Image (cartoon, rainbow, N blue to C red; front, side):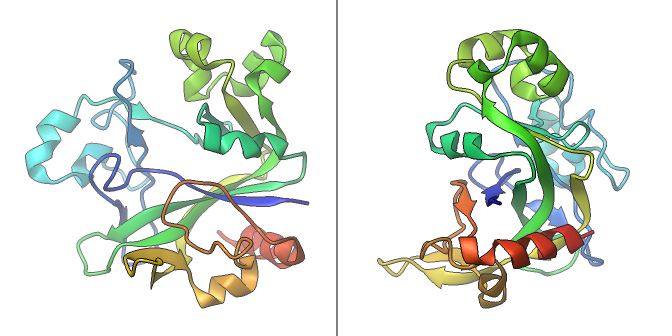
Length: 237
């Protein structure tokens, strides 16, 4: 069994904000913006789980501009698909039936003081993964029709040769509560960055000695930690 952790969602580098974390540890998952295509799903039209349009979580001065900004809704938690054409995500194509792809995001206290940190926000129990080219066109439609990269024909046509797709089972979920996994460390140059907390290292290991989780590279759970990591992830709600 394999388990990968992947950073997703809006952040200060892509979108300019952290997602909101509420006092009860619930949260709002806010996708990154997408400037390539006009999708009917925008920050002004997509309603969050807390009953407010996602645009409300941007600073007031940015709301008029972000209202009609298309969102890149990926991963999507309706049919549980994820897609990405980036070269550094190719390893996700090795996921097999029964493996786990866990997602974490940068969140910050909303209407209360809580410093930005990284939190587990959902996971897929994988059914299938691979390059888009590994699937027949009927399989693409059957398995991945709701994925952002598939539902837009021009994007799918342009990215198909590089596109990695993952489908989760009905046991997958977007969590109701966020679960903190980070603490602050430093890199070799002494620059601050977010790393896996000591408590979470006990569950996930150190990803082969690379316990930085600042960026969006997949982080693979150490093999000797997969049983405890799988049990922990599946226990989350």
